[in-house]
Length: 119
Image (cartoon, rainbow, N blue to C red; front, side, top):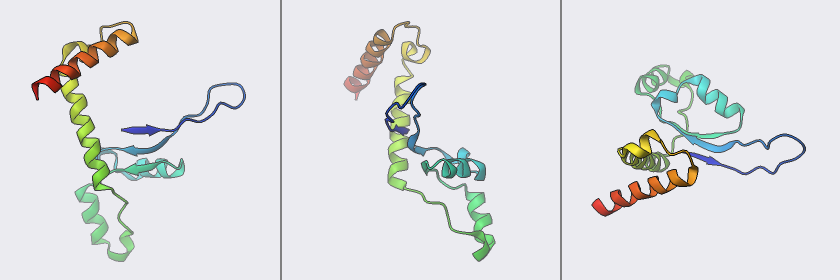
């Protein structure tokens, strides 16, 4: 789940767009990913792998601080991901045969209505 910020266009070319923060799963909890996000000033909500956590704790005071992690935000990411997966159960939404954006939006809306009516 990316939360994008709008940056006004200044001069020729397209405006720069950078997310405020990134919520990802444990696959992206490695050092290079976290360093990349930190270098670009992008906040992140990524849980720490259990083996990385054990290695950090084994080092004691040399292991450093645990990375910041917001559980509530991660739960919201999981909720959104599950909703998208339920939408993708509709073949028309998953394959996106529709050529026009507004037709696809109608297809996704119809699939969301079916999900809503069934629950």
